[in-house]
Length: 292
Image 1 (tube, one colour):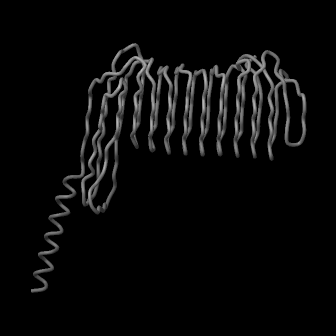
Image 2 (tube, rainbow, N blue to C red):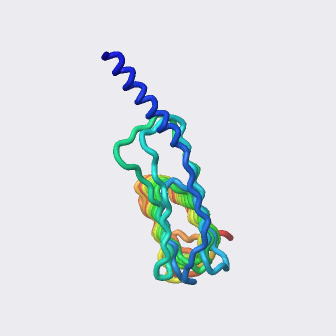
Image 3 (spheres, rainbow, N blue to C red):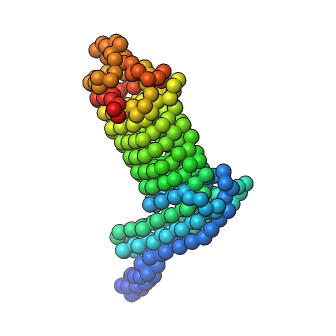
């Protein structure tokens, strides 16, 4: 009798697992158009996606989401995924909704192919919160704010006046840009080229920092790095450069005049303007140069 009961239980479990494994592959597809004011903001909240955002002379937003989840094995519950999109006050809110109810377990592997493509007015702004997303953003000329735990960000030909970027683990690559920029990266590289900023605040704990920008008269530029190499290239303008270090090396090209030099601090002047540049590192190398 006990053997029969055990066999019946195993059969029920086996049938249950078969049902669970048959439900593991799922797809989500969304391809729609939404309204956005000319100076409106796209608010995006996602995770684990490859995201491409392009600005153009269009007047609306085209949102294309393609997500496929493949599980090889068994899982006690199927995950729920949806994309909540709302037009409100001239802005567009795009929020990912995921979750599983109850207790879950999984045996086997899980793969997610997740692509988001957004085409929007180039005059619009972006406000993004992500987790393990990668971004390629081109020709969006409004304000851009991105906060993500892990992931890489590429900004190309974005000519807005305000950039606010925070990354825990990932790289930032930027070609173009003006106005004010704030970047904080815990573990990753910062690479900014062809900039024309008048205010800059960069904070990198571990990685390399490479900046090319013209300097604005009375502009303010501050770079702080714990364990990183800093390359600062001036494309135009000039000013005063104060560089301090705990342990590392400081060098400047012949275009810079050395005003003061000590074991832990150096001060340079570059003719052509009155900007203020402050660079502080704990352990690494600082190199100052110009494009000429």
